[in-house]
Length: 199
Image (spheres, rainbow, N blue to C red):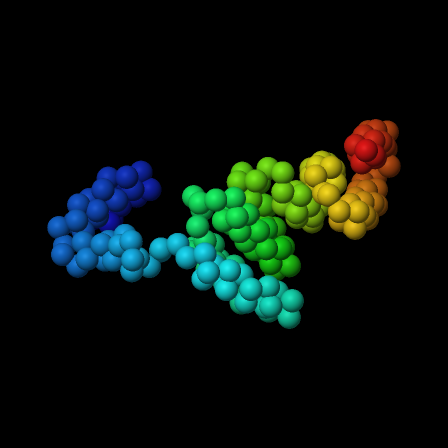
């Protein structure tokens, strides 16, 4: 039945497959193992998440992006999501760290997705706005990049962080100038971008 199904048949095929599995004892045991509060494969463990994050940071620093991606993903699977602000911040940091790896590896859409996930949890996290701005710039979305970096600059508390964002904004505006022919419409767009850049 599954082999002969079409995309339109998918809902009923999936339901039929579930009905088939529900009557199997082995399926019930696997589901029980996954859901068990003490031994679950998907249980949350802050210490394990922090350890995977630490190892991921080391791999990122050494340029082993594939391993870093795996470790950040592993940390996200076990990081608590419904606990206190410390755990929320851990999840947000992990999404932004993974976004950085994805950006380095050229997976820009996936990078944006992780930035958006971080911002859903913590809309005031400057690093998520900064990372999303850089990803948008890499995708030639200069207006979005300038917007994101302006928000990041507004939220960033450190002088060094604001200086870094300012340098990034200048680079993006230079790229924007270089990638567009200089007609009246583009000059107006560039003027708008430069005005947005100023506090």
